[in-house]
Amino acid sequence: MKNHEPNQTTIKAIEEAEQMINDPNTPSYSTIEELIAALDE
Image (cartoon, rainbow, N blue to C red; front, side, top):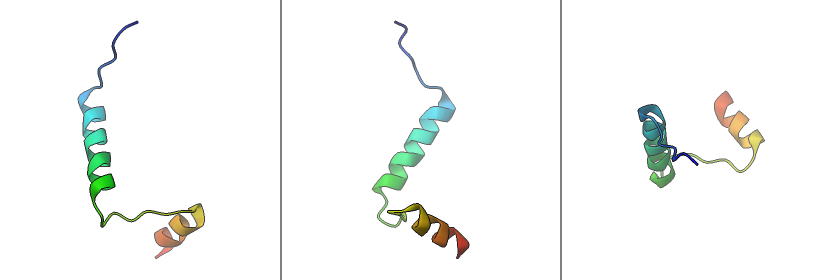
């Protein structure tokens, strides 16, 4: 089996996601309704 290595775009996306997860100011939503309501604001 070939060892998969992510490209630069994927690496940047993973880094961005990790930053968002660790940032207490990043909003999170428990339901799709909450997400939609936030988008409508």
